[in-house]
Structure formats: C-alpha cells, structure tokens
Amino acid sequence: MRTIEGSLRDEVFAYAKKKYKSKPEYLWAKFPDYGILRHSDNKKWYALIMNITYEKIDPERSGPVDILNVKLGDPLLRDLLIQQEGYYIGYHISRGSWLSVALDGTVALGEITNLIDMSFDATASNKKKQEMRPPKEWLIPANPKYYDIVHAFDNTDTIEWKQGAGIKKNDTVFMYVGAPVSAILYKCKVIETEIPCSYHSEELTITKLMKIKLQTRYKSDRFTFDRLRSEFGIFAVRGPRGIPNSLSCELKGK
Image 1: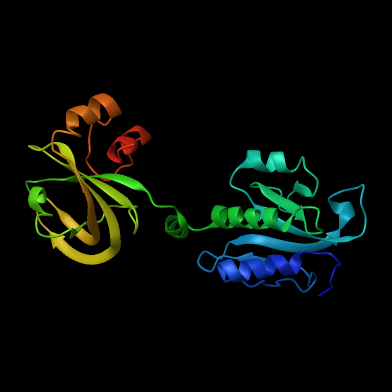
Image 2: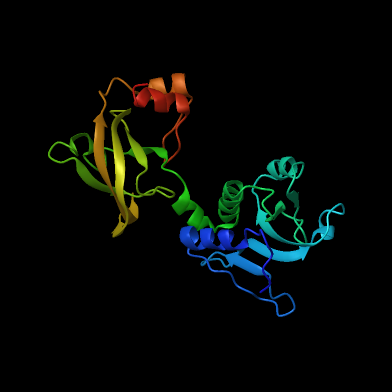
C-alpha cells in the first residue's frame, strides 16, 4: 500500500476499528489501495477510502490524494458541504447522497469521524437502526378486562407485560388503562425485552414479554381520556404509539 504524506487514512481506519469493530477490506487487485468498511450484518458499505489523483475531483489541484466516500441520509447536508473546501460530490458513487472528503488535513479529523457515524447510521439495517436509536417514550394500552392492571403494582414495582413492536430496553412506557378507568395511571421504564412467551386466547395472543419498572403513579382523574382527546389530540390508544411533546412535558411535570 502506498503511503501519502499527511493522509488521515490510518486515523480513519483506527476510528472505525475502535468504534465499530470494522477492519478495511481490499477487494480489487487493480486498486490495491482501495479499502472498504462495511456492516457485519447486511454487508453494506458505510465507507470507502480511495487513492486517486486530485485532478479527478478538483481540476485546480494535482498530485495523489486519499479520499473518503461516505453516505449521508440528508441530501441537503451533502449539498451544503460540497460548497466547502475539502468536500466533493461522491467520486464514482455520486448517487444516493454519497460524499467524498479529502483526507489531506483540509477537513478536520473530528468532522470526518462525524461523517463516518452518519454514514454508518444511514446504511445500517433496520434491526441495527432500532438498536442504535435513543430511548423513546410510548403510550401503551392496558385492558382491565383481561388483567388487573389497577392493582398490578400494589406489592411490587416490577411486572412483565406484552412487548409491543418497536419497544426496546431503556424506553419509557406510559400505561393507559382502558374503561372504566380510561386514564393514564403509570410511568414505567423498560428494563428487559425479548422474554419468550406463548399465550393465546380468543381475545389475546402474546409471543414475547418485556419487564417494566414503575417510576410514577398518576391519579386516575389527572390524565383522563377526555383530557387526552381535548388537549393533546389523542383519540384512541389501541396499541403502542408515540406521544406528543406537550403531553410528555405534562407527564414529566415540566
């Protein structure tokens, strides 16, 4: 491999190895200096380092240069960046918001690693994106006809509950108890997910459970269905759903 003085190639590979456990792969005998970084599950590339001549991306410059190709999820961001020195439309991978960055020190290493993170996110599988997303707040239904949810936390602060699609560990769930209560009664933190379960009845099928820990109790007259509908635009709670920021602030006492 040819070494270009001042190139940040080694620093980029070191960052990817430390954060994502990725090692460069050299796939082309004709281009032995081209190294790709890819996801371990879906095998998609999230970065490609190429050794080219500057004239191929900037006619006003000459000589060899290492460039990093990354994919951004936001085409507008790419269009803004290519107006700055050191950034170019993706060389040989111009489709799909790919961006080329000169690794000659024009762009700071910190900015480059941020772009690698963005590219890793943009090319990740749905499963990995779900794992990487920050904690989320959910409003989930609880039917007192099937389970005595009103007294569920009388003798314990932790129970197992049906896991809804998309919910993961460290999320927050606000439990809406159906008629005749018709109100949000509990705020809980999800402390475990993917607990196997095999339950089936005419009314309900459960294939996996989550473990939730009580954090806050609400009086039954505080977050009633009438209030959810009139103040926060929530007209039904039939399954796990996100909640508006205004309701989130109220539930957290802000």
